[in-house]
Length: 131
Image 1: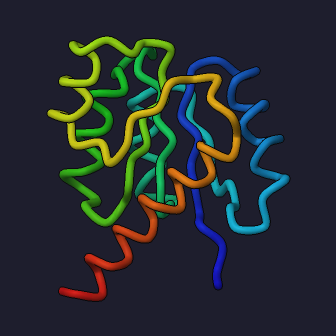
Image 2: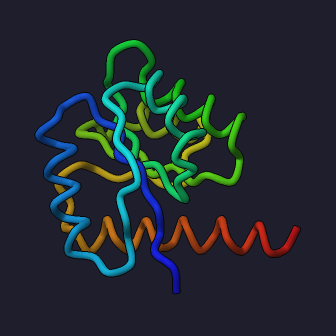
């Protein structure tokens, strides 16, 4: 099986580095790029063509909701897993409306993050094969 290519999007460098370190432990996931804001995420999604984008919400220039919408409109085959410290009904609603494939709270165990990324990837691959 080929590795799941992901792009990490977060405005905090230490968060991106921490996630990068976690993904180095996975045999199934490869980090192909990083972005530090939503605008950069949209641009780099086209360059890196990840299978899944790991998207923060609160970022400069374009927030995670708008970046997700733009990525989904331009690259519908890319899955988006939104991760945030915010876990309110309002944030969940906005995430769903933006088109995310999954929504996770920051700080969950890495196995939950891995399995969610794998589920989103499998769902996206199934859709592509059925079209």
